[in-house]
Length: 223
Ligand SMILES: Nc1ncnc2c1ncn2[C@@H]1O[C@H](COP(=O)(O)OP(=O)(O)OP(=O)(O)O)[C@@H](O)[C@H]1O
Image (tube, rainbow, N blue to C red; front, side, top):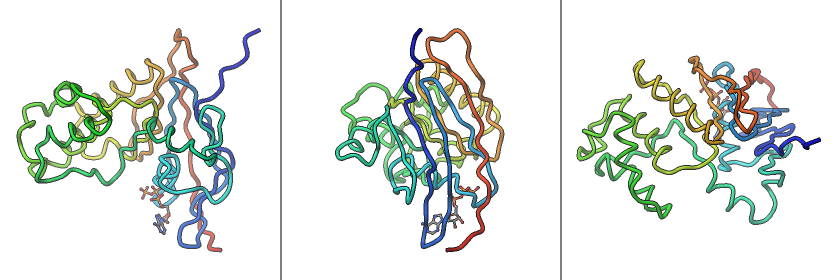
């Protein structure tokens, strides 16, 4: 009998404190290749905080995060892990004085990659804005640029914080399509959102491409 695949990402009884206050507590989750999770919960329930924890920007105050079975707090592991994760957060890091093209290509160069920026901008429907300054983009176009970075700089774990905010219906379709294609290649996505984003289970793939929902309860406790 084949043993079950090792999950790529595990959060076990994770808690986080910010400014002396418990913001999330006892969060458990598991993601396998091709897996996805919809993270919901009321304002302030800790969705962004959890994604930032998973991105490695802040540390859990309790519990454990495992990547490919290894504790992320082990020496040296974070340097490997951070090349596997891409966070699309509320701050879009778009440089107003750089062109739309440069705003993606810059990150591509940092990864030692080349050639992905133009197709990514085209896919996201902002190819014709490539030479314009980042400053001129509308809210939805800024979001499309952020999503283009995901495509130009391939990484297996996508952490998406309210990725559909500002997108029109065609943009939401593109978002769903790109998550779908990413997962079919074995990628994973965590989507924190108040707006339903279409995720599904996929059959007939070599990995169990399931999706789950996780509702973070509000925590009103001060310590
Ligand atoms: N840097 C910080 N210092 C102190 N408290 C913080 C910090 N960042 C977040 N918090 C607090 O943590 C709680 C959770 O915030 P978070 O942004 O994770 O919630 P959320 O579920 O993403 O909310 P929303 O649905 O409004 O986007 C909030 O009460 C917030 O005030």
